[in-house]
Length: 341
Image: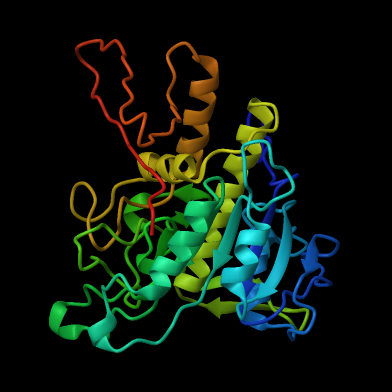
């Protein structure tokens, strides 16, 4: 929907990171010339290449076309992620060399006692993200819904997926059929890990298609049988690349804050499950067209902004924004911030 005018979005000019179990096959016909292998010692990997295709496959085989078919990728393995991410992430609104987004479709096996806890791994990735307020990692929620049967599958997200400063992505069935998007068809996958965090925070943040995703693999071919939050995460990230491209085009190459991206995705998601946010679907099914429309509406009415960014500090503790209400339309605001670990 965002490839034709007036959007004309393909992911061109946006580079993202993939940390995974191995290297993306950059010579795959879907990715040729758009992958930089940063961990040269890592073997080429089916999972990593499948993730990359979902993000950025060119559509050499139309059924495999990625969400942002002209985006570029830096491919890392997961061994040194906490040290590599700070060096790679975007540091400011004008930083076009750093990575504004990254994909992390992996996690740790955990005992049921660890599920839902804000652990050292979540704190570690929060510290990385807090140091880079223009860099947003996307993290798979996990596939452990069936582990906590006594809790109906709830509280089955662990470790990094519980971090505050990442986008945690759950998996649903494909909501698109025959080119028609029907949000009600985006039903939570039986495996997709569910919230909440022990402290009551909403997780996952949003959900995206992660069932039977067709994409590239490291043999140079394709595989249409992959399902998991590992597949839903690049679906969401690949879509978000288009928002990065749109914002840069409309605002002189500037990057959005990570908290701005997060608020856009949450604010415009299609509500699923219980009314309002819940521990199954988070704030709902990603709707990148609605998010793009909000960016364009903001650009068209800067005197009455739709997006407001700011910073609170120990010396500047409050911010006030006024608006005029028509007395009829619903008022809806989404507030997101980057939090200390």
